[in-house]
Image 1 (cartoon, rainbow, N blue to C red):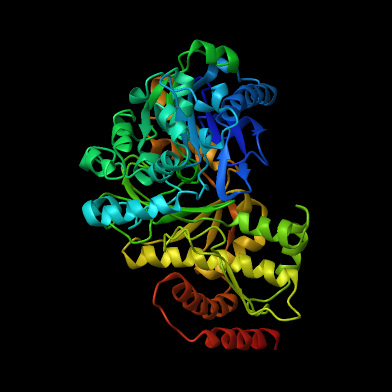
Image 2: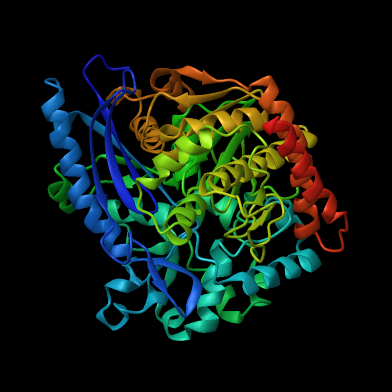
Length: 563
């Protein structure tokens, strides 16, 4: 590596804001950062009360955010480091939520920039948690089972309404004018590098295998995206669209393009900087958290993503209910495995704001009160399906459930039960992975909740039965993106020769380790057995069991906890 100071920039586009982080390539330390909240809608999300499953964002907010966060991060780095100057930035990496497809015109400009579509929700970015395409996802799943079962083998057995083609086909059905006006659709994580590099041909965009493989059924083994014959069975227009999508999808350590002079002037960076291929926020967060074979990274925020890697041949070609097994999607030389839950922090936010009618500060008070409860003392058991189930049932038509309430049930009781439900959901995912030969020795957590709420971490350790560590970086997604930017820059510029070298230099863990408490883990094992009864009874068709046994079991566990 070059001895002169070299820095990489990671751009992290989350659900409500964008963050830029300047990282020292020598040790991964943050030199400066900037953050900007999306301005459109509520907390950056555009909604429609007539369509409760709709969640959109203004893609112009993404571009505007760049003009704020990059100069802010550069200024912060200059203030904190005497050896920093913008010319020392050697590369840029990008992560974003997914699948968040954006309709674009023939020059790859967002359709939302056209005044004719400025106020049209269907012309905006279709946010990852938009579930309007439930019918389309089910139809794609049924078609693939009949004609292309190998498409489903890669993605856990079912297509999700959160995914690329489900959303685009839904747009064609409900907003044909938008669909007709869109020359192509680009994933959020592909759109940003293309915009910064001035790419004006959708076919020339270097798509990330991360989003394409996990969210768009892309695989080189069958020629990339689902074939034209398959898409034509949805509609002729969907088949025609395939010809206007990016030609190739590659890992995030590759170069997507170079920073244009106009963007360089706007951001205060050197023109010509290499921009790495974009990746999904959770996947690059796993890179920044030090993901490796045998280690699961749990990104716990508004939702949860569980990311693992396995050497080629060390994982089965299909794990039912897992959101994808894709070569090169996390680490270039490994299989990337993704599972997750549709809502975690969103459930807690719903409970505090909609049920308790409280403000953000109430989270702290409820966490403190919930921490005073012993496992099982609430007498409650919940299902964490308030936004559907991603893994392992892959069913967006499922909803949340709370069992065991009495006239004495408190807000803290429910708050703890909801945390426990998300932990049980994570345990079910872990069990599914291990039952198919993917071993998990330890868990590293990152994300807003993991960093802010010790109660969450301890409950997860007790339920999962494994040590829980925290990444030393509080910005693992941006750090992972920066690592990719430094790999794209290469060693001659002061970057890394490989992602593994970047992780070795930049990734670290906090000293504190949350270890399972044997007594708590024993109680949670009993509660988890009841959770599985509820999980299968409400989540799997034609499953029957003794519902009364769950209530009586909860009462007995509560009695023993209070003794």
